[in-house]
Length: 288
Image (cartoon, rainbow, N blue to C red; front, side):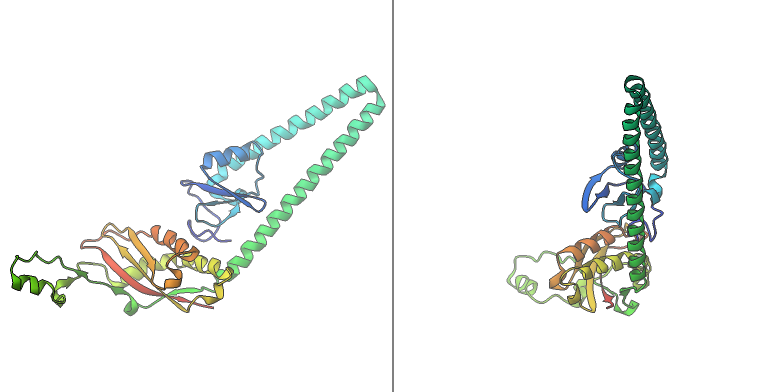
């Protein structure tokens, strides 16, 4: 499964933000990376535990680069626990043999075999879980290649003009009457210095993340109702921050798809530019 917040793949190197993790079918968190690392080091969570940054995709923690140091510590701690466990078993065996002779040793040996069988069963379970996760990533990776989401052309990118602030009319009958008239063309201006090509260039780097949002929507009960084109709108500020993201289709003005895409657009950063805000409208083409 791809990670939509740190680029496609499992080499997630950034450690800022809160982390989610799964225990069986339950999703838990968000928690800081330090808290999650402590659970791994204490052995409370296996190294195949799926983790993700908030809003991101899940991967086994052992494959996430941000946890590399913690994984090494967890393995070291696990070896120490195993060694201590073996020492305890041997010590108990010696004590029982001394106290009860061969019969006690026999029961200790049986207990050890049972413990070893349980350990091997757990190891096999973890291996099966890792294989299942790998198969899921492979399937989703193949689905991503379909590229469900494509952007419109530069000609389809609309950068709106904004209403120029008009002077307050004097309290004369004629001025009041003029103020009620329809706004003139010269009342609308655009001080946006970004071109349609600039808008698409930065947005194109995040199409894979939008693709994942659409994939998740298609898994839902109404996924087959997605239209072939979704018109979206957002504002690019001069500092490069994207705000006021929205979907014009009334069926998707709220909900999971809107929330997912909002997170994507909140993470987009355009180069700084002069001029004013750039209100943008453009189509997203949705494949089948």
